[in-house]
Picture 1 (tube, rainbow, N blue to C red):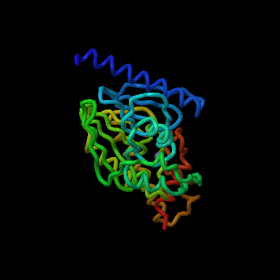
Picture 2: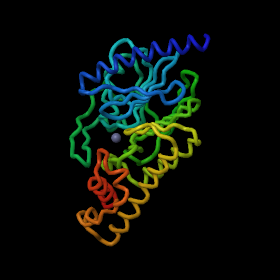
Picture 3: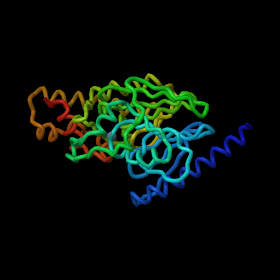
Length: 291
Ligand SMILES: [Zn+2]
């Protein structure tokens, strides 16, 4: 098929999904869903929750995460959940009903099958209905071949949670890193669900090893970035970890560690996201002192 036709066909698919995704999102959240091209046939859908990655082509559609419950007759084939949090799996059931195969690390299915508590905000998360659970799970890696690309799904251990995956579109040179990366803000680490700051930094190193200087990085939250910004985010994590660890080793209390403002000069750049400096330092402290 000539390239022009391929692109036209893709755009028709893409527009169809986009409309149904946007309609469904409007039912759930009073916000519009923005779409942005990233590279090749990879796009992002962004709105209220986690960034959804989308690969579109003649083979059908693959979504990375499912904050939006798309409806209609979109030729959806695969949904990959980067982890179990509700803002990344919320559309699973509807997308599965629309024909998508739900794929995730085995710990995502385990956590979605049982009641969970989100540590920081103490939110009870009930078990998901059977139709929302990933029906294909894996332990280490899984590779999909679709739309002319090789899509590598790689599990990283104990990072944002215990079931995180990176998704690399090898040909498009795009890497979706889920909630390992909150671009422009301090992140959340779900220590109760097996996450850790050390693990997050290790996982970012694994992610960086999959990139080159022109790779586009899709974060779980915040704008798509290049590799340099992702490295700067890693440096921020290392700086905060080292400062908080030093205070913890001195035997400081949680309140004293927060009052010491170990994020100081970093707050200008990172302190205006979903997690303000105090909350972020508390997350780091709790992770380090957890028995
Ligand atoms: Zn998350």
